[in-house]
Amino acid sequence: MAHHRLVTPLTEEAVRSLRLEDTVSIDGTIFGIRDATQIRIFDHGVEPPADLSGGICLHTAPGVRKLPDGRYEKVSIGTTTSTRMNRFVAPLMDKYGVRAVVGKGGLLQDSVDAMQRIGGVYLAITGGAAALETMQIEEIEQVWWEDLMPECLWRFRVKDFGPLIVAIDAHGNSLYNRVREQAAERIRSFSFD
Image (tube, rainbow, N blue to C red; front, side, top):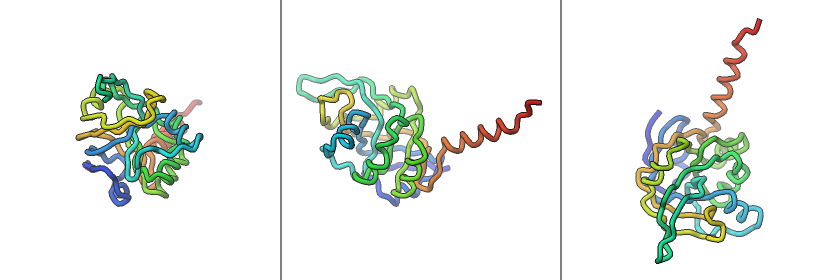
């Protein structure tokens, strides 16, 4: 296991250098994205208003306060569970060049397969770490589709965001699959006689 400091936008080479259970810190830009934003993009066919190439998407619907000048001030920016957004991961990477997704709870096998094919990773963050995440986000730089508040598309500037764990790498490995297999093996080892 190694620690990597990544700067956005990410290249395929940088992503493929990451291995399962490595840790990562990020400097640069992260896009906040949630169900409603992705439904607009993929189900309603509306192109995203930002270039996501080499990008990192954080599964979030942040708590914010709108300032008199129209900018947003961060209040609490936490991460939501990723599994329900699983169907959007492959198209985000295939069509828009996203290289990493940050979330909690993991993704399903079709996303693992897509990440291996495309060169993407899933970076897990500890649930309940919203206070730390909020501090590591230096600024909310831009917000698109405010009618979806708080599930807008957000652009955050981050510094030393993490540490995150490489929970699905670009080589077909999944920490979630490994834990399930280990649990199944332990259950099989029990004798119920």
